Structure formats: structure tokens, C-alpha cells
Amino acid sequence: MITCSCLATCPAAAQTPGSEIVPEANINAKFLNPELDPQNWVERFEVESRELFAARAEIVDSIGLKPGSRVADVGAGTGAFLRPLVDAVGSTGRVYAVDISPRLVEFVRQRVQDEKLATVAVILSTADSTTLPAGSVSHVVVCETYHHFEQYPEMLASIRQALVPGGRLVIVDFERIPGVSSDWTLSHVRAGKETVRAEVEAAGFEFVDEVDLPTLKESYVFRFRVPTSAP
Image 1: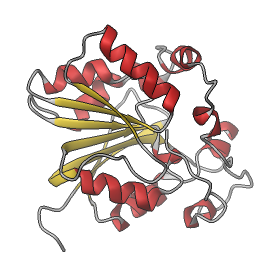
Image 2 (image 1 turned 90 degrees about the vertical axis):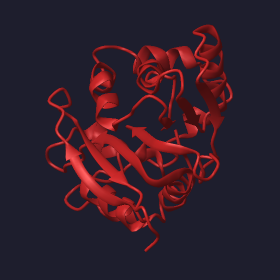
Image 3 (image 1 turned 90 degrees about the horizontal axis):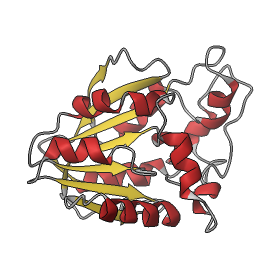
Image 4 (image 1 turned 45 degrees about the vertical axis):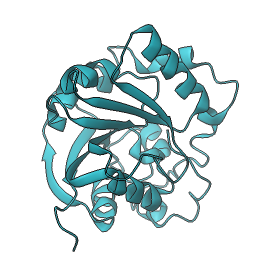
């Protein structure tokens, strides 16, 4: 979960025409609370009634991982995607679980130890950086966390730096359509997918495609890549 205090000044915050509902400020404050109880979020995030969790196998398939891939789950939360990612990259691959919440990072580290996930490294990120080394990963997945990137230009630059040339970025996030989406979505998600695509392309990524996953009714899947040569 990525946070910062710049929501009021972020240009994209105003790019939601047709909606009188203003996305919430300080969207990540609860995740930075030192008294956060990770188990409460497990009960919210890791249930089959949550569309994203139920579709996790299909989402991981869409990333294009192979044995030996190095993938970062940016905004890993409680680690709901760890097991399918570990299985996809195999014993020669590497999974980085990245999150800004110290309490969730602590929880995931314990989970990795308990489940003996030897190929997983857990990383505490910052508001504007994944803190991953340059060129350290072949793939990055951001599952329903992009709308938490309030310092999105810096975060996207950090993701691009962490990816190898030709590396892939997959973003799964909520559709935000004024007059169609729920009030919760309109008040929680700051930008629709057209704005998201424009932001990511402005950060130097090439748009690859939008994946149609029939199991996802409320979210979209975008795939991008880092150009293989500098512009």
C-alpha cells in the first residue's frame, strides 16, 4: 500500500469529470498505523467473495511468468498472491513482496517463514520508491494498489528503474466510471483507467494490451513493458 500526502495537488486527482465524489485523502493512513491488526485485513482481502482474490490464478497467468522469472508484487498487502507467484517462478525464480506498511511487512515476513517460501524476499517500500535495486526484476504486478500511489510519478519511475529492459508491468485496478461505479469506488479510487494508462505511458512505459479476464467484473488488467532501448 503506497502513500503520500499530495492528493490535493496531484494533477490526476482532478481528472475525474462527471463525478461530484472526491476520492479520499490520506488513503493509506490506516496501513501506516502501528496498531494495525494484519489479521483483520486477511479476513477482508483473502476471501473468495473478493473478486481479486478469487481471480488470483488467472491474474498471475496474465503476467507471463516463467521458471526463473523475478517478480515484484508491489503493494503485496497480506501476501495473498505469494503462493501462486512462487509456483509460477519455480525454485530458480524470485518473488519480492513489497509494501509500505511496516505491520503488513512484519506479518508477511512471518508468513514467508511459516510457509517456508524460500524464494520470497519481503521489502519495506517508501512513499515514492519500491526500494528495489535497479534492474533487479523482470516483472512487476500491482494488484488494486495503483490508486494508492499518490506519488505516482516517483513510484512509476522507481518501478521502471527496478525492471530490466523489456521488463513487464501489470496493473490490475478498479474501473472508475462516474454514474456507473459504486459510490465506494468513486470515493476510494482517484482515477479511471484512461488516466492510469496515460500516467504509466508518461513514465516511459509502452502499452501492450488490456487483458480480458471474464472473472473480473469490477476491475481491468493493463500490461505494459519497458522499452528495450532508451528513447
